Length: 441
Image 1 (cartoon, rainbow, N blue to C red):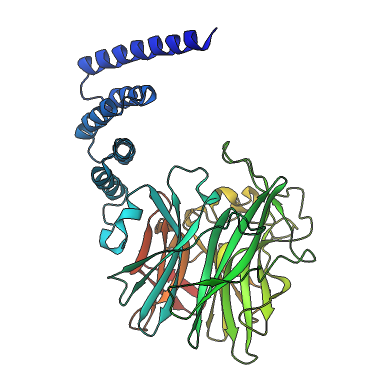
Image 2: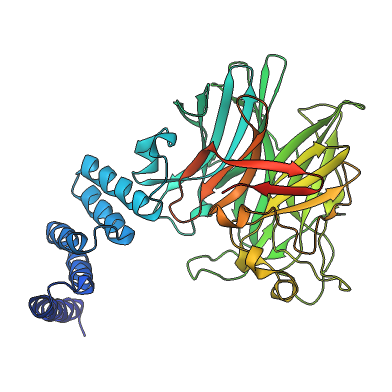
């Protein structure tokens, strides 16, 4: 069949489908699914104005359907109605999270436009907070294959000044060409240090490294030309990523990302915790080999020397790892002990381990906690189900803990998994009693 004949056939099918949908709408005008099917046909034909009208008809029936509102926003963008599109995205986010304090999302153009936001990290300073986070286009799948770093500042976690994008991938780089990942920030003297992770995509997989940018004003950044940490093959290696998305061709990843910096006052040394993979074979399934790596340096700007993994969770009476990856590690010193926190998507946890724990505490939002008497570990689970109580209910991912503006407590912050927007506020207080941590939802 010729291309012209194929196009004509598709047109006939589309016209027939349009007629069927329109007839179904006449018979049952309150069935929103018929409007959805009709709008999708209009989209395939490129009739965006007709699709917009149809989505609006569907929204009139189910005004709080987030998917319809997102779809409408997409179509409005295609016809140049940016303001209306942003409003539609705004309403879509409210439909998912009706209690979300929208004014906390300081940059509505990014949040409710074509962009998504994820993986925030905060630095508390004498005059407030500095926020860094990842952003990218909403329609790219999987979303984590993109990423650039943006920033904002606030005196009180309520009023934000957006500073724009501060770091982007460098296409000509041999280590940060493809996407930037999460990091941490540190201030020492008159200098700000922005630690971040970056990826380069090669024929046989993804290689990740950790970089550093410095600034005297917290606005303009100068990058180090080379990474300050690469995983030492004596301790760290690669893993096989599950094929969760047919659009994701990447399987092998040498993980080295999400750096978190802590200074040990007694020695003056700097310790970097990071998402990593154990270097040796672990059990029969190479998917589950995640760990938290650690490296040390006498200077904050490195280079950092890898040490053995600080946290290497395995299933009891087994050598098989629990997690595919331990993301966004953070270490907090309390009562002469070190507490390590990290996140992991539920689908990336070893099913054999899930059978042994309290599943009511496990969700994508669960914040896992391990403890050690030594900064470099080894860290052990705080409980048989090592989850910070309440974290499983926040609907956040990559949860981090930060000191409140008054300095009298901690709060949890992160990003919403569904809407990919940020929650940067004291909305979720975090309390600590003995070895028990809890996030109040």
